[in-house]
Image 1 (spheres, rainbow, N blue to C red):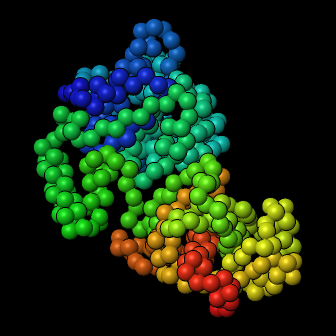
Image 2: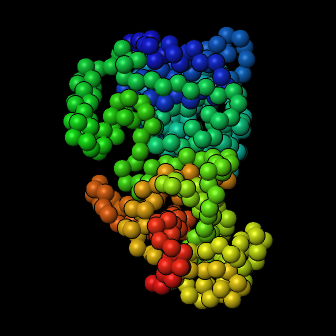
Length: 399
């Protein structure tokens, strides 16, 4: 039988149009939201009002094994299920032609837009649904529910919760009095392993697992090279010196960063991030962006013709030290801030990762989502040299 747990009571108390529920495993998020939505459907029926509820997730298999099965179990356990109301082909449960709950997935923005408007939307395991699809659904919904385990920060945090009429709730297994004893036993074993890692000074697999699935906190992918960096609207006054760093591309973007430095901190602005740039196109953009010809530009030396072209234009271009390990080490030594307009650099930071083989993180970097990250490495190595050596020594780097 359905039990009104602490988690359910907390969710019922939410009032905003967009309700964001982050939680641990076995906190009862989906098991609580589904009955709440069905009661909403009954409320609309009793008032004689139209109500379309859409429940969606990453894919149909996820939806069938998750929200659909939970809905069926709840309805049958409560003696509410009526086979005549269920369309097993389209996954729609109708109280009438005007009140129904549908379980659908959307793999394109066009399908999400074409799906029409609804009274209530529930995106289950929202962190696995693309933002552009979610956005197209949310804007066409009067009331929105999202739930997820926060294995990392994503659009619910950066887009939904920063918008008006949104509300956040975090629940854990402690809010679920209906948790099965065997599940609680497994959770406590994970907690013990996490505590052993922390006591050994290691924040490894079990520590991170417990943060996300035990405590309901935002976790960090173990394969990420850097932690998520803070974004700022304006450059803090303490940053007075800067250099440029550039990683050349063509099919993939050319990334030119303006890197400000102060003691062990960096503040990064994104000047250019564009694919298909020829040398002439790059030069034009650099002039348009008023890139200084007096400030060093530490550059990817795999493209000597590009360096020569920039030098011919009077830009002060130096060859970068491209040692990956050294560059990552120098970046990690520093607190890094990103200007909020550095959209592509922000995205790269969240995806820049080591390769995983059979679940084991290797020391090999994925050669994707790394254009701005490469430029930042070049700049960090140069700044490390510049901060301890004379200018004359630093600008003679020749690799």
